[in-house]
Image (cartoon, rainbow over all chains, first blue to last red; front, side, top):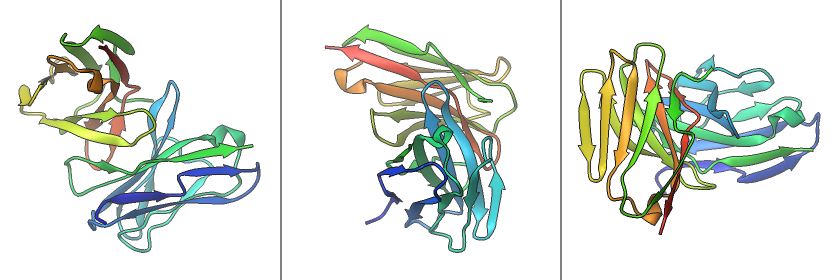
Length: 111
Length: 109
């Protein structure tokens, strides 16, 4: 199916554990993004990528790692999860300065 | 910090009324976009207005952009209960889209 998919949809993890959120898009869009959404903060950019093997920090990158070895995949890793990283995470993609397409989100709870 | 800030934070209207949401931003932009988010879902693109455009229409949506005031507005006419959602503006300077905190619109039947 064409589109952008995130997995898992829901995740509960313990403080200090490493967790990876997956994002896959089928359009071969150049740009991909990770946002987190918290009440009162809207969407804040964590990391973005302009192409395979090119990534850059967004507004709130601390505690996160990304990679983009293939154009279609953009995984986000929390190296050592903290309670402050409890959030809803959205992946998005686009091709150029046009509309972005969002995944359905991953609700992450760190206990 | 957020580039775009929506106003009001929450808006409640009756079905059939018009809803107006405003967005202010701080730096120069290439375009400005509006997105909608239903509860528990991802964001869906509504409309894009380029920096050299002043007004754009799409169905019941009307967007204006005033680059001199660094502000935009989204008007939804003849609102329906199904329009209940959060609405976000996003400024587009280059690669990144920067979002505001959103307006929660509730349309009462």
